Image (cartoon, rainbow, N blue to C red; front, side, top):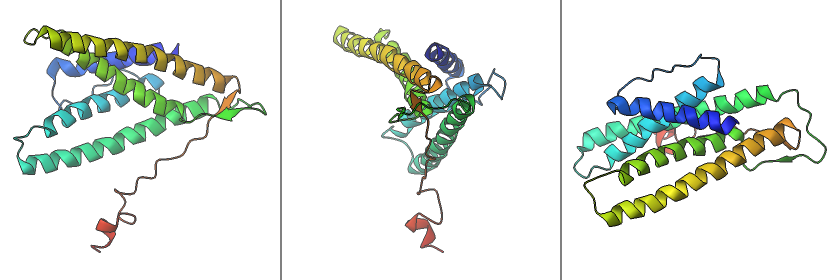
Length: 200
């Protein structure tokens, strides 16, 4: 199943990142550049680095100048993440380009890649909640609460993986069709963000 492959690659990326646990560590993608595996690994690496950016920026003692620099990095990371999601959808559009949707075919509320985006974030939640469960410097109450949350996250993993596989199968069988809308982000565009274009 595709979801099994995706989650395995997400775990590879997360585990590789945490060897050094450094947001400045470059991504060393082990998969061929023209493969879906490459895109999945890259997608999760971006998410993993951004996860830790978000932790760092919440430090109440962070230097304001460092915080602004980090905010710029988070903005750039968000744009990169969106770009890779669109590359993943392009992969599926190409994969299913010869499928003729049935007359009664319907569109899904989100594209395969945006569901995969949520799956990647879920892999990170599971990894870090497991870390909390395994901590030895906390109370039993904390451990129990985190275990309950982990159980729910694992259930979500099963449900979301099943939903992704079902969506891809429906598209392949012509039961659903893909229609991808490019993300029209306005705040990065000098012609659409009034704060930027009013400075000219």
